[in-house]
Image 1 (cartoon, rainbow, N blue to C red):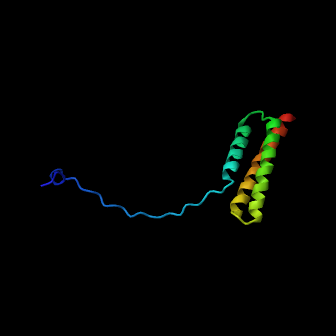
Image 2 (cartoon, rainbow, N blue to C red; image 1 turned 60 degrees about the horizontal axis):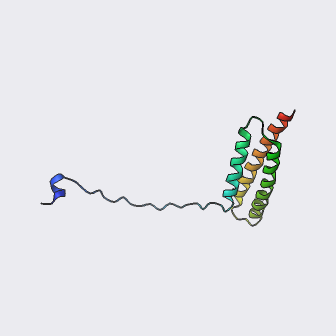
Image 3 (cartoon, rainbow, N blue to C red; image 1 turned 30 degrees about the horizontal axis):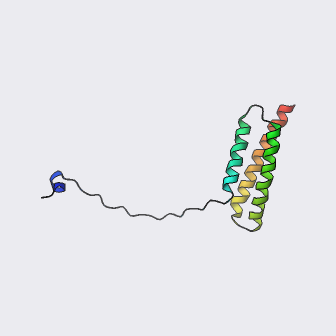
Length: 103
């Protein structure tokens, strides 16, 4: 008699593995995410800086150019459009907040 039978330990049946599709991330997503984080951190401040806003706008222009080329080539077109619109919205909100603080 084996030890397993003495103590009543049973082995579990292996569960069937399911294969799920993994959506590849966009090659630009790292730059977009870092820019989103910087915009969000600037929005959280009570008095955001105009100089940092201008820097963010310059970086956003570069990201927009890359996203526009992705849209033209129809490479992840829907995702690129969503990212571009989200960035523009966030920058508009930040710009409105800065204008309100200047008055």
